[in-house]
Image 1 (cartoon, helix red, strand yellow):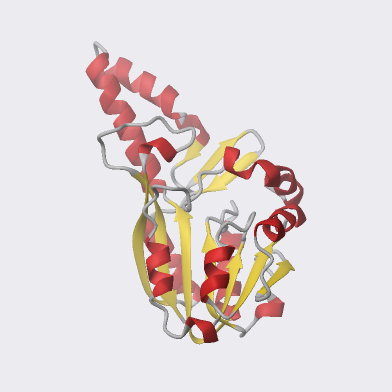
Image 2 (cartoon, rainbow, N blue to C red):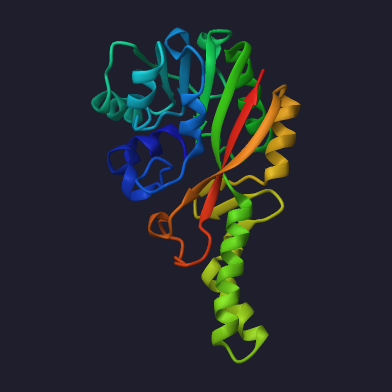
Length: 249
């Protein structure tokens, strides 16, 4: 989605986006940020801040907070939710963060590195690295491709129990799971003009290390089944997840 499309989404954000900050979501990113020493002396940036639902937490904890987004509409909504004295708003594309180069102790990107082009993702990760001071930290949330495959397997298992044959169950599962919209090689989801990037765990590790990050670690943001948006729910089964990434310079 381009910046104008996100401008239009801004006022109905929670109707369209599954947020890792919803009630009931298990998000290890919060615990990680709480462990950062002397946060009052730190400058942090929320890169792709959206409507600013993470800003109150950051502003309360860190000395200076940059709220960065390429959508003017998102930034307007973010100002409404939190306009603290230590929050600075910056309209910027993540491929060009020059005003922040070398200024940050902490950079955060929550489901904002979604560009479909391989080279754009790499450019964003390299640009995030440039914003960090020596010893700086990067923390992010990235959509999980493995979770999509897991969801497909749950659908297939259910259909196998219902159908009279494996071939019939597979046809139904492929249709329900919308397999035709996923490119499992590139990790892309396409629905009309909408294209979104999902990430494999090994891919994230490779990309971050190639960009220059060190000590890359992955955890999971866990979504209860009543908070998975348009995905079919499977109560009683382990939840779906996004990847929670931690890395250093």
